[in-house]
Amino acid sequence: VKDEFFKLKSLFPDNVLKIRDGHKAESDKVLADLCDHPWVHFACHGSLDAGSPFKSGFILHNNKKLSLRDIMQAKLPNAELAFLAASTVRRMKGVSFVLWYDWA
Image (cartoon, rainbow, N blue to C red; front, top):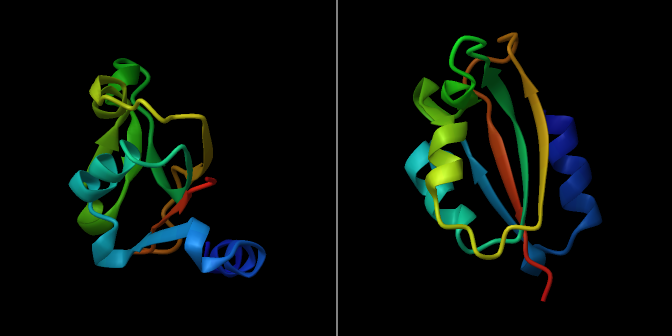
């Protein structure tokens, strides 16, 4: 994940890239940011609930889940693109990145 993060940071200027990493990648903060940003890149662990798919989601800081239901119920007037790099395997405990792109 860190390699992915640094590669994207090298490709995009600071004025179009917002980063939520570690304690800044809490699910409530990320959900609030989704309202204001047209593009998002999630690079974190995921949780799949085959019996209740809308309970599936992204594991962010402190193992808090941002569920698909939470995202679907949010008012996201600017949503254009989401890139997801999630894994259900926990190899890098505590690492999560959420990258925001603002193209004006």
